Length: 112
Length: 499
Image (cartoon, rainbow over all chains, first blue to last red; front, side, top):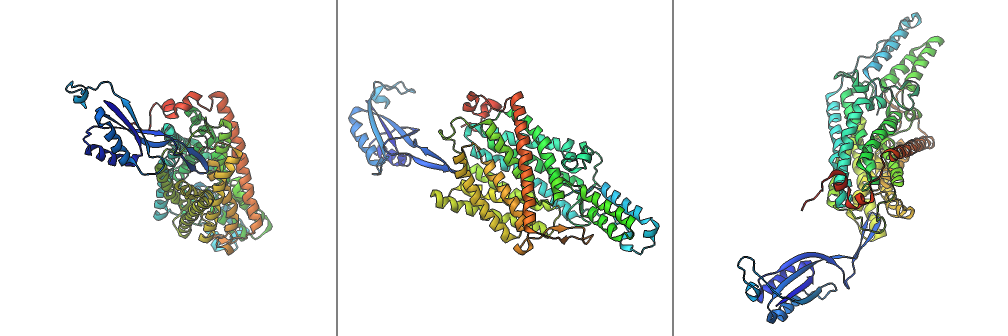
């Protein structure tokens, strides 16, 4: 099992969800985050006081998937979240040791 | 604004009666001067307008100013600003009826030039039948209406100051400072600028002088007129024009704020951290409420409901529009983007600038004043402040003091009838009616500048002493930890938003 973690542009969330649902992924966790990468921040001016805002709002999504689904999940997220502009985000994949569904006690693949 | 209590009318009438029983006068057929005018009765329209205006000016403070300022601070300090404004309103309201009204609007005897006395402390001697003068001969309003209206001015002025040192002052220190400040700075300033005997007192004394025939009675009548003219605040006697409080409210609060932000020092992280406003939405709501309330402030300052009141209202519309547009476009051109905060700041700058001029300037003059105020205050807040490097958190100095000075000086120019102004009122050359008096632009502007200078000095030096006193006894500023945590939790034990 793998955790696929992606940082995406906030307005892309619905498209990403649709794409994941389309390939049979039925669970997703979303967190509002801030960060920076190659896309630099912007400047805000309040009555002449200029502030460089270097941390931009992004969404972090996390999906737990069976290992054989990993590449299609990556493709689905990358395809849906892509605008071609700088700042589209990144996808990270990490190994997942164990999963438990709290209600039933099912584990691993059955819990996903 | 001016005041004449019924008691004064009584004294004036008695003085005239005393002159009339002199034989030489009694034989003179001066029937017009002979009958003392009947006590005027307040007009219901005037009274209603003053009561509405008082409520409008209260709305400027709470919630207008509180939201305007509150939106500009960080989330962690929102409640501190709201609490400070509301507390000031409540405390000053009590001080006003205890002794503030008396210090501002009674005769102070030997020190009458600068402050009144305690003869109306705890509103002694005032009842629903007491009246005060307006700007027209033979027109009075209930004294209760006048003291409510003036109370709202005393409430908002110290509340304006808090913007200069927002996000770092200790609440207990602020409360003590405000009590001292209104007592030693505001009440005397209001007295100096706005206290006088009223048009009927001047008119009656001038009539008596005109009626006097021999040297002895002339001398007596002249002395009586001099006494009436002397029964006014220092700046009023000098002929300084301040329709609704450019000096008393805005320069007064603006310079006190400036001194305060220098004495408290900069906020932690100033120039390094993001100190951006937490809700410009609230700032816009607050600014809009201020604008609406300002009609009570400016148009209400005519103390009656008539054509001059409508002029003051119109000026309060157009000067504000002009200043909002001026700041918006100046920022667009110089900084690249037209901002909401810029536009509403411009509107406040225009409101401040037109305050002393609102009943004296014409509408076109007010527009010019608004345009200038928008651009000058924009440059003050965006460029000059950064260049000098003082941390006036919410630009009390750049908007209220600078805009107030601009307005006070411009009033001396824009009152000129040839520029569409209404001219300077003269109550003594044709006693019993108000005529446009002699006007010399240069001397009027100099008088205005003297009033500005005295206000800066009085409030600047006085406030510095009061800050120092409070700092030595209580300490003005919260600890670094409290400032980092935010004043809402540190001072008040609650937070503005619980998501």
